[in-house]
Length: 186
Length: 171
Image 1 (cartoon, rainbow over the protein chains, first blue to last red):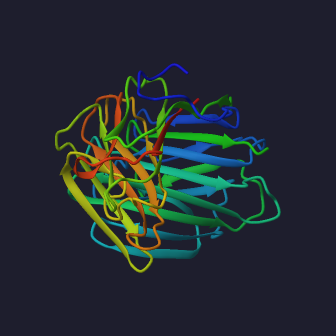
Image 2: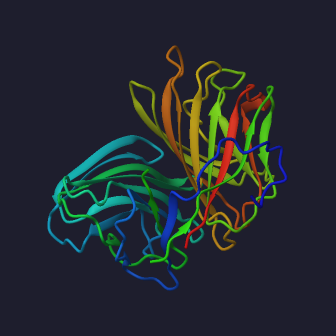
């Protein structure tokens, strides 16, 4: 591997690098309201989204919302655990029009982008609904930051072939990056 | 959509004896994200595991955490620190193996500050149990080229403590 002049000793194990594959990436050049991944192949077992994102609007925290396969019905539900730097809380919603996958900060702090890692497990299984899990957050050096765990449910047994990502209102900021990966099973 | 293999192990360091830190240096910038996985114990029970980047020891870090100790959940934040706390509120055990994973998103970009997201656990059944998630901020637009893993108060990471760094590259 081309790296490190470290104390690092040997790489342990014989890890395969073939089971985790990059599918597609979107980096926002100018603010845009929607980021979509389409024609997602069914050849993986799980999907992972890795995001560094910011809302173009000012204000507080914003939700990262998702729809699968262009389903605009109230076929989603969610639970989340929230830390705002002052207290911990939990919330949820049933029968709603979006999955919620993460959190974005506003553009008030220009250089701060939230980090989110989202797993969409067993996304091609047509025998059950699809559940997501995600971890995300941001910090603003003393101003209110957030750490959140989300779990969302899409009440549909179809294999996921597309993901549309939006925020509450407005746009994703320039430099927001969205990367979709596929994880293979044995 | 074209797919390319990624998630590359960059380096692993397992301590043969107690040491003050594990340092990853000369990290190349050709990946999109880094993932740091740490596991082991500390010499002083309850000491936290901290991260410094690019040898920056100034107060350019901050973090917000969400933790649970088996009874209650809590959240807090620390501004203008000299480190990002991996598990600032729950601490690390001197006997029970603790684990943590930190994602360093978009670490090589030179336009934005760097945000990290981490989760960790201390499964010590007798004291200081807990699980914790932390969003960290390093207020620098420099590409991350070095990561220092260390513990509080100049204490030691225990023998057997291991840290592994992975790189992920997007299409």
